[in-house]
Image (cartoon, rainbow, N blue to C red; front, side):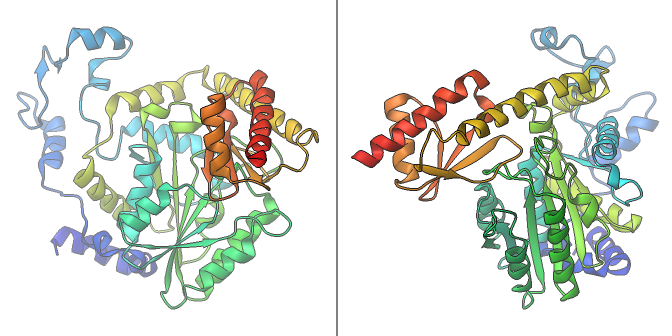
Length: 432
């Protein structure tokens, strides 16, 4: 094993032996080179005052070389903020700005010890880093039965982990914390579990209330008390889009110092929060009382980034930073939130109007981009196909009964027509 990896492992064994026990074989072996090209280039950037012939970019007139045809479309930005490589951990100013945003959005983080957010190539990349660092073949990844299908690829196919599902809703159509607890305690033989907590949930658009979240936290605590090392990952892709009386903060702050055998990891980003899907700017953040542990986890994370994408795109990091620093940011974001909330409320009023009879039920939703219908008489895939080919309407079929509808991309004035047509399609499919 490389001496740098060994040094990081020794730090974790000393400072947080439980975190060390959570690492995958890759997580134990990975490190960030201290004497490689990037570190030598970083040193030269501060000390090479005459010539800096270290890193693989081209310069001209003291600025990064660039094509006018590209710069003309980006003239608001200095070339150094878009053409140079961003550091593997991300643009330092952006990391600081996002950390400040985390405190503003999650007041209960005050006094919590957590690391500086590390920039990822959006949330999928952040989840992939979690998988690489912590998931070995056969390790349990605990997720609800209503989940984002990419979890299977990221943790199951890529890393060989075992996907363990539990029902998202209980008999009262609230979050099924008892089932989560049962699924976790079933991993005592393995002594380890990775838990993905995705709120607002994709595909249902559900976020638990305060009492439900207390039960979730208690379930993870019980698992840790039972001797299970828990990697608790909050997938906060749709964070902030809370339209009703759910919790308004990430569970990350409640999990950060929950138990020595619980490692809280927050994966979030600008992708959905700031409506910049194509920018691919996300973040991964670790919580620990030990600064040495946080530093070691950051170094291992940088090793994963260096060995996969090297670093994230610089232009989009600059664009997001510019937005966060703008005095107009909060007002513009509030405007978009009101639009999204209006769409969600309109969908709920249509579904509660009684106009669709007993052709479907709908899963509780109160946040995010989506909601899910539970069709009672016909196949969701049959309805999806019928809607697509007969009416030119796209929806997502999930399993036999569930049809996901993204109200996020439908103007409020068209939602009535959309659901009326879905209802018509269900009736027509049932009549075949």
